[in-house]
Image (cartoon, rainbow, N blue to C red):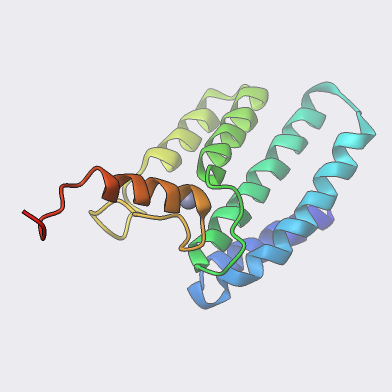
Length: 145
Ligand SMILES: [Zn+2]
């Protein structure tokens, strides 16, 4: 039940960009829950759904924190892990209507605020910095001709 309270807090944080840095602490609270559930090793369908829901919430927290632009970002690929966790939930629920709902939510463009791709997941992300440097190295220097 505690994780439901945490997940509700996460949704409230997501709704207000000024609160996005708080997702850092929410991630760590969720991580403790996930480790406890995984350690119980209960097995079975409900256990697997529970683990994937917690992993989904963890990665939502990571993406929200990274979007805050604060230092020490989480994994660059947290967005991809979020989609994989959502797929895990849908797969274990084995409910075609829910699966369709999840995929529509993931693939919807309704939540996009910009037509431009995001250049960096976080200004402190080392993966994004490396990619950005590579892009500049491969760009012809237009000043020196
Ligand atoms: Zn990144």
